[in-house]
Image 1 (cartoon, rainbow, N blue to C red):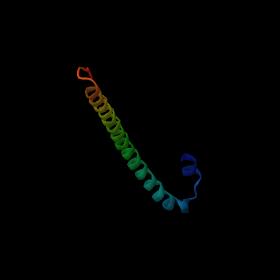
Image 2 (cartoon, rainbow, N blue to C red; image 1 turned 30 degrees about the horizontal axis):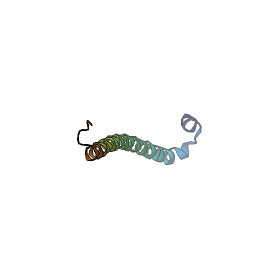
Image 3 (cartoon, rainbow, N blue to C red; image 1 turned 120 degrees about the vertical axis):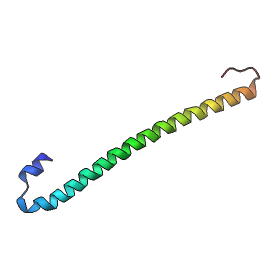
Image 4 (spheres, helix red, strand yellow; image 1 turned 60 degrees about the vertical axis):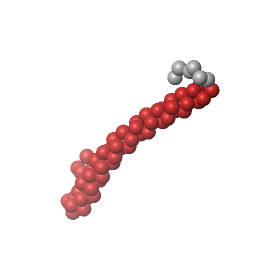
Length: 69
């Protein structure tokens, strides 16, 4: 990005800066939603593990009466 800033003509500056600032803003939004997505991914994996453990213990209790989960 520094090369574009150094070598761009003056008449393009306002046009480019507008899109550059919009790009930075959407990059910040994207990083924020990436953090949210990772958090929800962790939640999903945790609930998947919980569901798997519940299914295993349920099957275990269904097969044998004395089963330690």
